[in-house]
Image (cartoon, rainbow over all chains, first blue to last red; front, side):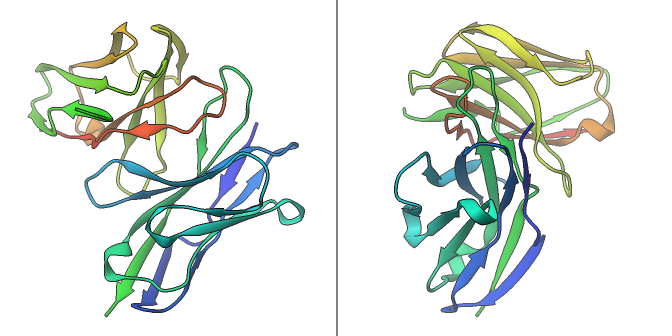
Length: 114
Length: 113
């Protein structure tokens, strides 16, 4: 079965600074990869997804993620963080097998300092 | 209306009450999901329906009873809940099971007193 690890539970960055959130997965083949964002008391919103092709994926709100097969990683990046980016971020993994569900990481809570 | 909607957004209930959570998706998807999200715990998958048939039930207590009358609607019937059941309950849908991205509703914040 696949698993997802987000090593950082909390991260604090200054507004305008760059951001990288880490995600590592465990699976034998190349899975489908996703990043979601959740604002307090809200549902999860899909930021971006990787199925195949170009390993650098662009998403909404200025986010991007890079799939690195050799490192089994799919890290999320943003060059300049805005105060409104403060939220919880979840990495998820899926495989293209009928009946297979997404596996979510434990989440990283991002705080933004003014 | 678009996306995934959930009602009510907030619910307070006593341990002896019976209530239901409702989810509706307007995306034409075939699969629907219930998740429980508690403070400081990972997202827990509760139930999965594909084409109105339950395909997953992750050892959820029987005081939670799902119902999927059609591919657009999903209910979670609640009875005799415990205070530890207080959480954010999230509904999601996807094109189908099998690794597709899921789209989430805003959730129902449930408090059991």
